[in-house]
Image (tube, rainbow, N blue to C red; front, side):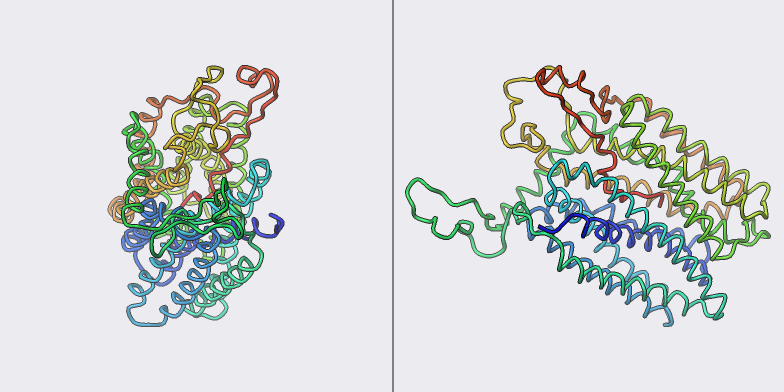
Length: 503
């Protein structure tokens, strides 16, 4: 089997790039091409939609085809879409055409996220998953630095040296397209083929799944179950059950409120952050060049975001989500005041602006770990009280030794549902943010962003987090359920696919 080192870094580097392109590079590109803040915020916010509604088709990734096949095919599609965006830029009506192709790429990227995360869990044993969570997160962040930092800087540099903004962005998008075609070729060759990675349903006529050679017809022996035929009733049954087991939670209203409101302020801030840094001082901005934006926000900002995320994961692993929730709520919201200060004083020092951006991103990365951990808590379903096993809790083939309840059966799809509501919580407020900023000005807008964080504080006060959830259990803790064994549970916060950056 192929070494995980050959494909995990490139798989998660490839997972991060399209999200950065759609959520950050598109904003900077359209700003460079002369669109106003209202149009940029409104229309680029619509690009969140595939991540919002991806739970609608996430069961199909589980039911049809292999995760490997989905990953490889979608990387080719993303590469072709990036090349398509580059071709639309010199045309009349480029805005509408480029948005349409960005939409195609966003749908492909959202589906790729589902398949890649599922493939990761199937291709690695549990101890390997724990060992590589930091690697996958690291290379996802590397893709953010490459996109928000390196590519934004390159676009700015090319625009300044050639005087042709359109050509500069065509080169950048062309390089991205070539990168994905190379990733497609590489992963087609090196991705392993785990036995577990097979469709639950197969297209075609009904009948039994494929049998092993030499096995059929032998008395007392049965062939390994193959994929069942993809009948309409089987597809519909699996599809409906995925949603029923999620929405039947007794605390579903509170769960959805937290997922939708936790980033209410950030959803508006992030859409106007790049325009604020780029806009001239006469319009209330800081007047940075595109290249300077790549340095301040795309490089130092993302590095601080990464550091904050790592510190957040380690902190939850040490103390558990329940004890960390309020410090993390404060860490993610309080630094927004820095943008109020930047808008009031408009410093002309790039170092000072970079420091403020990095400080806010550090707090965001630290606090956002709590949000990611909460989604994992929701996806894993109701938690059993430690030390009180019931006879029905005995392992019977479920993942991680848990009883295979119907909720756990759809853990991947339920996590996708959580990320869908997370994306909806970013999309809807972001759509109106450009109009609000143009009506209020940057200073009043950033004050409003701070006020908009208060609903998440109210919802967080009502959450009931199991004590110790996410905390690394020591031998003494494990003895309650397994007196003769020492059990170590690694905090799964880093297993969140790192597909939820600050955009």
